[in-house]
Image 1 (spheres, rainbow, N blue to C red):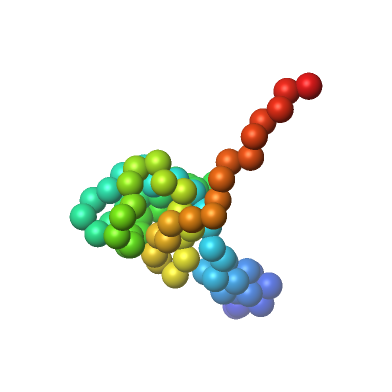
Image 2 (image 1 turned 120 degrees about the horizontal axis):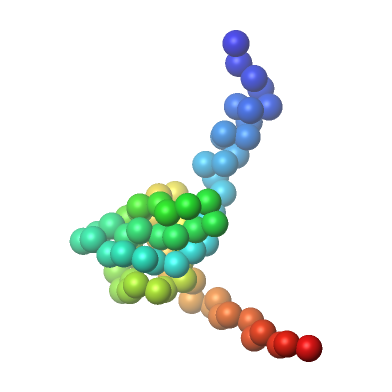
Length: 74
C-alpha cells in the first residue's frame, strides 16, 4: 500500500539542490561532501578539491558568487 505523503517527499527530495565542497576528483566524476553525506556526481570542467559547488540534477556546478561570511567573536 502506498503512503501518499511519503511518496510526495521522495519526489520532492530529488528536485532539491545541495551545496557542498569537492573532496575528491576522479576523471569526470567528483565526490562532494554535503550536509546529507558524500555524493558522487559528474563534474563541470575546472573544478578542484575544496571548491564550493551546488549539486543539481546529478551534476556539480561551481558556486561563483558564494563567499564565506566573516565570523566575529563578541
